[in-house]
Figure 1 (cartoon, rainbow over the protein chains, first blue to last red):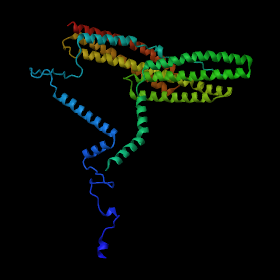
Figure 2: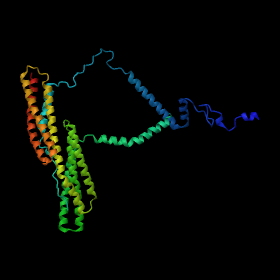
Figure 3: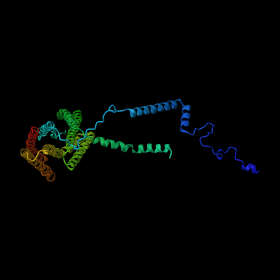
Figure 4: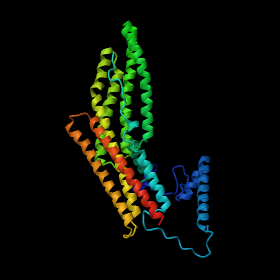
Length: 132
Length: 269
């Protein structure tokens, strides 16, 4: 009688804790690692296989491009090092006389174009007695 | 936290925020300055349409007055409504042109500019409502009443246009004055103290530019004083500003001529 009480119920599955990643109700193995999961996923569907392959190809291509870019050497390497030209400290560099003359000519042109009559912007003349 | 709830929260947040994001994007788009030329073309296009519609309205009105039939009455109403809408559209696009032109003035005082934008936008809103009302009119009396509604505001709209034009003149002259002054100072900054001729020339230019600045301040006061008194039509103030600007233009021309001579003298050594 005592033996019967201590025995687990035959259909109570929750009483026997399932080990993680070991199996399913159907008896299939559930892989624990990411690679295993991907492999299983690929086995199940052709579309998934194609997607994974394409993804893999993209990642490999990206890595190759990255490596090529990193290993490319500048053509001047090995030759004498050239000091970079120092940048002018002033934010508004003094223009050359010819450039300055050009600027003043432009300004004079703008002053000549200044039109106090504002012909192009005058208010419209409209009929203010429209009606029947 | 699992990935799925996070994703759901993200999608939910996007759904909730998307009207705000869209509205914000549209607001930013509307702030993109419309070019003056495009605004001018819009205005001219509406003006051409109005001229055409006005001819048709006059013909239909004459026919109605002559025959007085129901058919001619319906025809006259049908031709009056478009001309009224186009009249309103001309006024709206003209104000838009002035607004865009004002926005393109970098040296106009921002507070002044904003106040003017506010006035223009309020008037444009009134015009838009007037246009909507016109669409709903059916009888002659409704059409006439709505037409008179705009006609009553015509003086105020014209005053606003002349006020904006006055500020535009001041803004443009101000920009030219600043450019001339900057060019002068950049040109003479490295000139040695002993070079008296150039120093004297620079001093003459500064004097001229100061007189320009005084004239511009005076013109701004003229416009602002009109705003306060409102006793005369704005056209008078505008004409006064225009006169002042003719003098300002010749002072600027003289100043720029002197700067040009200074530049030439420096480059010749």
